[in-house]
Image 1 (cartoon, rainbow, N blue to C red):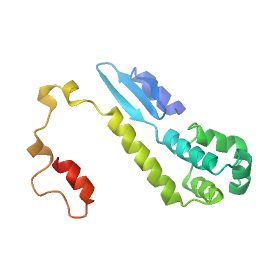
Image 2: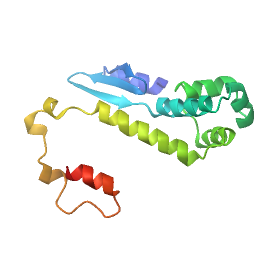
Image 3: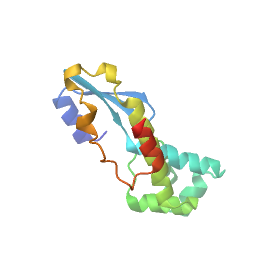
Image 4: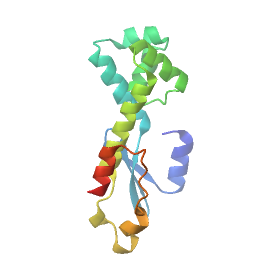
Length: 153
């Protein structure tokens, strides 16, 4: 959390409590929600790829031309990596950046599903009728067939 965001959170009386790796519970007076931390999910994916290859932090940091400590902080989700740094780390791992981002995206989607409120927890007046959310025939042909089947179910 940056100094600015800590200041803003304190000003609004907001608390951040870790729930699970990559997910933080944010509470403010009268409302609670869960915030997914992209940097932690990205770090998890990078570490998993490195460990799967049997490589050390030192090897990857040397090839990526980044300090070992900084790479460790990125893997632990403590630092936000720039796009240039990510490209360098991915190059050192021999993995396309697009693959890493796809894996992070998948993890993010799972975390969102786990953090989403259960419909029973949503007050009746806040629920939208299905007709308001998905108009008939609005599912594009570009959507994967599996997704269409899940939506139709």
